[in-house]
Length: 250
Length: 116
Length: 156
Image (cartoon, rainbow over all chains, first blue to last red; front, side, top):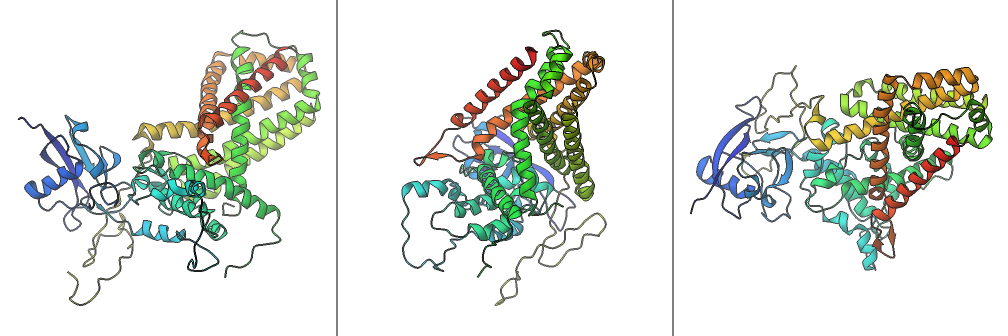
């Protein structure tokens, strides 16, 4: 049986040697069920053991294997090689992130932004003592936004994330909305100060690419736009009626 | 000028202006920008247009249709200049320029609409 | 490669090497590569081009308002001014510009109405209202309003 081969152009960058990334070419067999991750592991096993890339679950739930495949952000475990025949396939690290080595990007800034939006249940009971009752329709309000696997494809697709590194970004803002919309949460006011900010939702210009590339259909663009409406009304209320301010945060 | 207190106001103006521009402006431009010059319809007589403009409803309508879309333009164009041309360092100038146009336009509209 | 028994130092984003500073290698810490973003970043993907065109439609909006203001001024200054205004609008350049501006206005309206449902999560009895039920009425309103404007102006 004749297995077709496809050319993979993989970005290589070694901080000790190179001033900037370059593309290295490999020929990889295209088995019918193979995905990008299989190809990268084939390269690492048989062709060049120094290739460095992140991956883990290989089934689209850990969010580790995000790369730019022919300039589109994709999950390596969810993108079939056969759809790119006859090739070539260009694999580069995710855009809008600093490159540590080869296909590995530095995500510490994102993790800081994620923490900043307070993505946890804020309730006057403190650490959630007792049980909360939640109907299925209340769950449905935020369920979509809870599916995020932090794969960062949305940050790679969002031009604002590239142009403005302080922009909090689609995934973090969608996660904040997941908690804002949760009926068990009482922290909407606390989060508003962080989100209703030029670095937060107001930096977003609704390009919409984040929603398009999301592998879990989280719809961060929708989450952000819905929050803009709520934050705008709240902001105008506070502007027109600055008296009667809310209590100081405990 | 651009901070977290004022952004909601600018966004709301942008939003309102966007709705007004989307609903009303295409018909306005089509009439006197394309249909009349190309002879598809006859231009209304001056006397009729003057009478139309002097009605208070038309004055209010025209003021809204001229003012709000300008604020929509100001907000959107400000962000386009930041993102497209990456001139964040000219922040203050861009802001003043865009909203300056909107404010001047609004004042002009008010003056014209009152003195018709 | 951390010293045995000690936890590795926490990762802190270091200042990225710019053109001015010579890249130095901090032991145990890689030199990150941050590619600069070109002014023409938006030409790279068709989705970005469509986005920038949508944003540039705001210029057509401002242009239309300017024309409206000029028209109001012409009408209020008398019949001659109005005739001169109509004459200037019939010049080939003006018609060409206005056709382009009209195309951008249409782009603005269509993208605006199509994006509205995404910005509003309307639920009736827990079921998300389909987008068409939100943008549909807006399109109807648009057509109705345009018809009313034509009717009012053309019956003068």
